[in-house]
Image 1: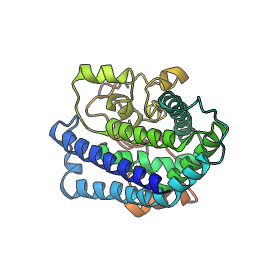
Image 2: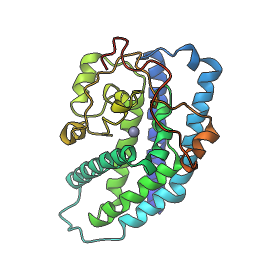
Image 3: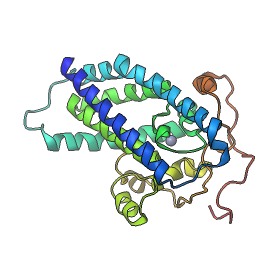
Image 4: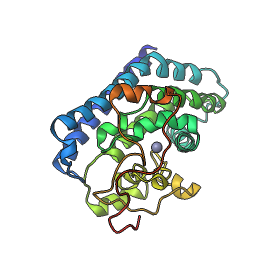
Length: 277
Ligand SMILES: [Zn+2]
């Protein structure tokens, strides 16, 4: 495990640097200027909420997720020697990226999973910190559903590590409030998920929330018929239709409540001012 620990540490430091860079850049070149409701104390408590959820996940990763993934990666050893190296890692990443497309989609379509995933979507604004805001239950379930794929395809630990790094690099980028030159964003969006694609997934209109599920490569939504036709606009309301943000303890408790409130019927105007979305 010593080599694994070192690589996981390097991955953690690299991702922390990427988060810090995007966090600064999105404040220098924001796509959306924060409204009064997300400045000062309100803005700080939002960061504390997202940070609190992230801390729980960070604690779980070395305790549960990493050891279980390493264990699963070592369970089967049928993969021939020729199926290794760079191209094999690329194929593994492609398979895992398609897998988490369906996992993410299941989180929206299966009510039990949505109880956990809604915690991510209740954020009323988006920036890099939204990318690490997940309920620990979703993190554990996500690690568990990945195990059969790892075992069945004999996916090596190296591929998992590369994939996890790409997922976080991509998630931090596509949640960020960074304003990119439109031509650059359009070019990137042909290959990877950009903020213009993923922000629509956080649009406070359920039809758009249930679209644009891809994480790293942008091809999966057009391929599986889940790409939204809505184009992002700066004042797009973010969140979950008919539901409100909660405090940190309320977010932790959300999946375990007996009677989740029914979705639907937001109290504020949704969609574009002209009603076209
Ligand atoms: Zn989602």
